[in-house]
Length: 307
Length: 243
Image 1: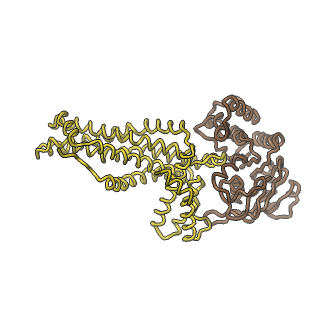
Image 2: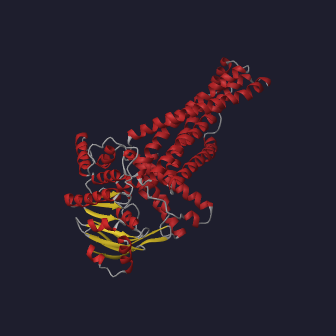
Image 3: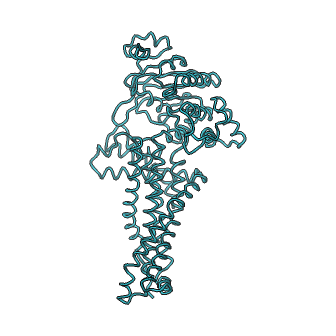
């Protein structure tokens, strides 16, 4: 499917068609520079069409165009065998070391607090047998993926934006291009592959850390671990776990593209690097919540099994 | 070898370069001088294909590179070596990896051949034995020399130098000048040197182009430039000679 879409986009040059359309709308000397241009790794123009155009809608469309072009360019290099496996493995190790302990800590804390507040209520209403199932399905479908996404965006996404941003302001990205190496291949693709592959692992860590901490806290408040596990086994299916992992794949792709894009757009020295890093984290977190809503609709929400 | 014809470059609604006509012959060293902000570095970036001119053409070995897509441009860029003002060494890679970067990306050299190539290039710039050092451990002059070794590693037909002597003491600046001329003599590489260091330029260049407000004000041999009737050229040269 992805191959078919990629071939069609290459054949009909969707990016260039979009560029030409935007050029005609804005009549700027350089057509929507940043959409295709960022995929090429060229510097963003000093004055973007968004500032001269009619408001934030144009800004949003331009941003979407730029990030989609960057992702498409990196994926194109992937299909042409341009992945540097060593770099991708290094990035995966960095994400694993940097982010997964944070995912485990935040998910465990949230699971424990969730159980602390709800265990008594479940018991009061005689719903103790459902506590394990509800907490587990909540983590598998929602809290595990979202907390993992936020943690990876805050730690690894910020690191990606800062690293690429520093490379831009010290002309290292220009040096890459001057040596005939596309930044989308050398910088973006390994980070994209690493984020997409590591996010499900981070999500699984979040799922199990949150559930385990919730079980421990529930046991302190009167719901035994065996009852908790039995409830989880009865009411949660493997599909719930898979749905959550699908979310993490999307979050991984989004975090890597947004962070790389912000890094490549950096201007203005050390201040610019700080600005790009902050923007990357804010955008990733907001986009995680927004896309989580739509993914939940697409994946038909919770499917707690009632036996 | 290299020809710019009626080239304009506009960025952010501002015209940076206007109607640039320049020709550089094979093996020639052309220096581009002018005041800060006159468009020298933009000119270099247009030649290297890092930014796209808004009009005109940049011909490298007879082929116009302006209309090329990014994949074709990447192939062209391998024929061009760019030495950056602050060297722009990859700070996560050591000196060996920096110099080997281009050949590793574009060729399938065996490790032994790559070692030999890197060793030869570092030797040519007087940096033998520095392979394991990180860029943060190098002085400004050493960084520029490693930058030159990296640019030369892909055996380019054209070498572009962006302010090669800025920020260096006079002794190191003279060493870099010597290196530029020696590199040209050894490899017959066509060179474009962007600089505002007049003394350095008069030591190294075969021809000099003087830029003012995005235009070429005067072009000629060093003697022609010294004898130029242009007021801005004379002001620039007099300011450098000082009291």
